[in-house]
Image (cartoon, rainbow, N blue to C red; front, side, top):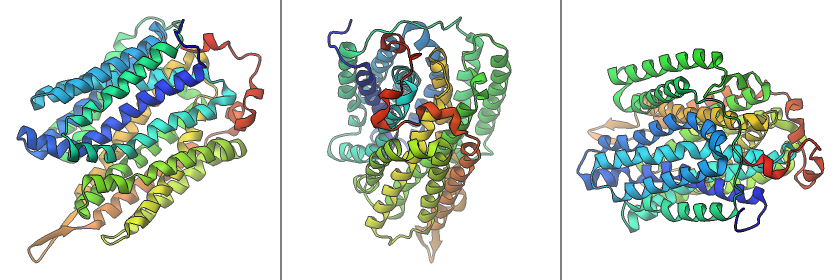
Length: 488
């Protein structure tokens, strides 16, 4: 029994949001420090990309196994272990004395990060009944959309005021706090029937996703015609094709692709996949526009990006309390995607003299509309997923989101490089915003493509989740399991 009696909805929400905030913020905060790390180790700026790629590949390798581990050993045990691994990896990264050491420790970090999201999400959706899933989604959005906005601000402060090592050390107190709170307040969860470990599925998924993530990450840097990139992408695609064939035959699949036969899960997962590409791709472009094109410092760039976080916070409340219960997921996600496309198209009109307050207003709107996609998408995805399948569904959902994010950044980076972000005239090199305009337009296409998934959604599939927040408790059915049985 835990030493502190507390609602498991609160306990799981606090631990999961803390872990996800730390995990997602790490990606954006490290990007700010890369040039400084390169100078400190005496290597070229392009050589430090292994720091990012090692983390992304490690995430891809360990995400597929996370659902099975959570079911087999219990959610609390696996989530606490993942936080320990991530926190230890962060501390080791801060102590690294060479680039190879730092890359190796980033792999350790990624192993913990790969287990955090699927296991924590499964716990969250098991402890919240369907009538309260919209509330759970608004909790989940705090970590997944707030962290990318805060990361550049905090990264700029730490790199400017202290050293690059603190972009890793900052995770340690957050991890310790989450561990302490979780140890005291999370109930020990009983293992689920996970079945036998699907070793072929794990190897195919880990190797396939790892190679694909490497190829997609290196494509904009080395060029898509590079033998390394073509080989990695081709081998990754081949292994993922074999994974599909194997998992559809397996009685206990590591990656349960049969879940995609459910209309609500398929439509919501596809929508989030495309949205992640558009959103994370845009968040990658915006600091480049501020710093490379306009010459702002990392801290100034982060502060100008930060209004997006306020938009998310306000948008999440409006979405969960007002819009979703009235419109349902189909129209809510579709309107959100159209709004996202509109905001991204507005960004195709920015210039080198656009007022920073205008930019902040646009980014506030970006946060506002992105909440109108993530909130209904995350709520409706699990509307018809049974408690027993929640761990596997969370694994598949997070795999899609991770791949979508990486794909969006890779495609938009390729557009930026292909068009050319600088121009030469009279022997003088100056920024060219044409590349940024085309890249933002490409992000808008990602958002519009997402409507191809959102429009296949039927509100009736998520009817149990379309409850106004103040009356959610009254809609719990007699079939809802006791709280102690739902937490996993």
